[in-house]
Length: 79
Image (tube, rainbow, N blue to C red):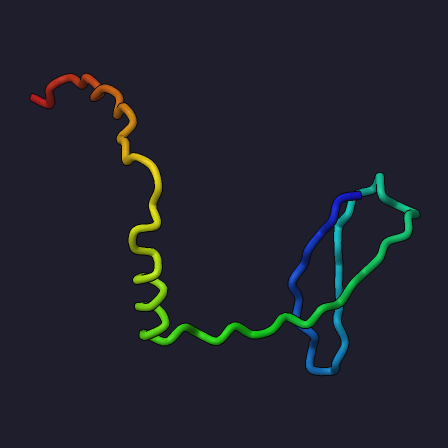
């Protein structure tokens, strides 16, 4: 069985309802469910964004290259 990650929200009554289609071939097998609370990300301030952009300056390593662009399609004239 493959690992499945699902994000869901606990309803206002405090109950988490899950419906996970795992496939008929997985019927009658035991599974483990782990519940972890997701910490809310606080939005970046404009200053934090600028600092992140500045930290990226000069980090590219390698050459810039433009791959071949192909040929233009030959069409019949409109008139």
